Image (cartoon, rainbow, N blue to C red; front, top):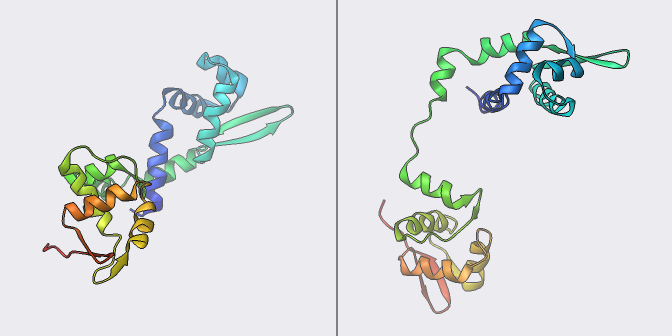
Length: 187
């Protein structure tokens, strides 16, 4: 399954994971309807139905046509069938099962938002995981001035002084004469 297909499938489940949207799909499977009819059938306000319909429309599951002053919504059954045929194959479903994240991956998910460190872990073991991630931002066999070290760290967290000290304390980097370098540790 391609990354694009996976994203489409993920969005499908996010959108269809809502009871009101599921009921809307069911109602539209029976017959095309306007927002007022759908709102009455669901017992919700029209703006709520419009919001749900926009979500379904983004996925291509619902189409709309003008009929006088009304907008009539239809279920795009062909799109649903196409998704079923292309994405719900046994092979694709089997490929969706991701291996369980490693303990380090769990820590990084907890303390990173993209490339930004969101907090300094209080537990040393978790801090070491984040430090191992951070030290990868530095090249092997290169000396850095303190200013350069700070710049690299600040791309990921504003407190460069603390992270610089942690890298030294954990023997991931060394310093002498105003220069810093990465210490290669055995794998």
